[in-house]
Length: 88
Image (cartoon, one colour):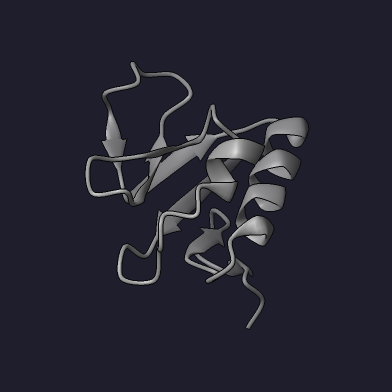
């Protein structure tokens, strides 16, 4: 399945809880903001928003990382564009 993961850099405070929970998906950039890594690309392919192909375990881990964010700066969408987290 594919998920679109988006980090709002204006909301991100660099707490790095997402990096602790899911370091294969999130990393802090030079501005101490979380960025999304692509599992299938080299680590320097960092951006605030990305489509990622995930399995069930990866999906669960990404949701845990998003839930750990103290400012809810991580948004997760399904393939149809429906926002899965945070719930509306």
